[in-house]
Amino acid sequence: MDELKVMQEHEEQNENRGDFHSKWVCTANHGFAPYAQEELRRMFGSVKSTMLMPGEVFLATLGSSEDEAKRLITSSPPIFLRHLFPVHLEITADTAVEALHAVVEHVMKREEIGRGRVSIQIRKTENSSWKDNPAALRDELQHRLAAMELEYTVQAPEWIISLFAADGVWYVGVSRPEDNLSDWNGGAVRFQREEGQISRAKFKLLEAEKQFGIPFDSFRKAVDIGAAPGGWTSFLLERGLQVTAVDPAKMHPSLDGHKNLRVVHKNAADVSFREHEFDLLVCDMSWSPKLMARMVTGLLYSLQTGGTAVITVKLLTKKPMALVKEIMSVFEASRMQIQGAKQLFHNRDEITLYMIKY
Image (cartoon, rainbow, N blue to C red; front, side, top):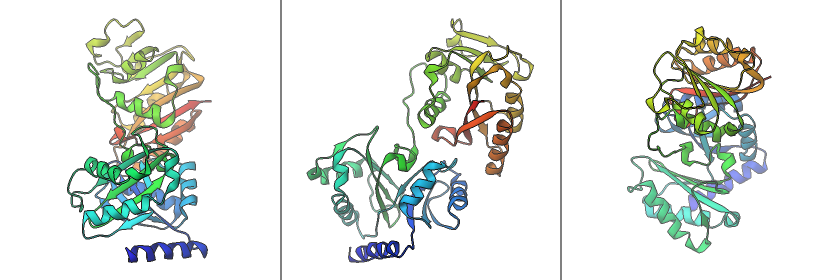
């Protein structure tokens, strides 16, 4: 514990001299951590990073203070960096009991978290000194913090206590959810599968709604390009929209005869609509991203000025950052203003674009 205190005091002295830096535990979709690292390098210059979970979680040291790093990251949200939290305490201890004692000691000094709802978010590596599951560690930590009389919540917390128990080192931080890019543990947004749900594709729109604040309930008429079997179409119908679904393949039988659904059994390249017919266009096709962009831009005449487009871009390349930049440029040249671009938890090997036509 003495060595830990010396390290913290040293960092405070560095900040007083203007030698700012901060540490963060960062998370991306599996296999995309290198691109999240590159995003940070482009934003901050030199970034020192250490992988904690291969291809997914890494520790990053940024050449900026915590406040400055938060300002930069939240003002220009990265595409591939899904979640992060600031590291306020690093614990190297022989046993989990000793490490847990240090966590409790640190958190109990943070009096500000007693004035709001708190979420404790735990993750661990397989070889962590904590051998039980993360939920057990969370419960044990809550038990030991009982004297603080905190109000715990899973959703919509005002403060998040983050703990990543890695091999040999525990990383702890206390932060506001907006500074973590997500208020879900590691940015892993979970939705419960409903009875009769057509596909898990619906979760992409649910997560996009939460991530970007898309007002799906406010739209009236939507076109779903490449709609089969109907995961996105069913979501929009549930929200009360009139939907035109375009796909030569069959739609799910549960959608047959829906009063607000029109199905066009054609390839998207072979359809035509009235000008400004729709106020929402969505597309989740497993096509070449360049072909998809060409096809969608060819149908943008049917989208009203001020209308919204939500599309996924498949990352079928070893250079996804360059591909994303190219596809975004294609849409921007077609009078689409990009409101958000993110590799969501449910995206896997793709990103979601949220755009408005001007």
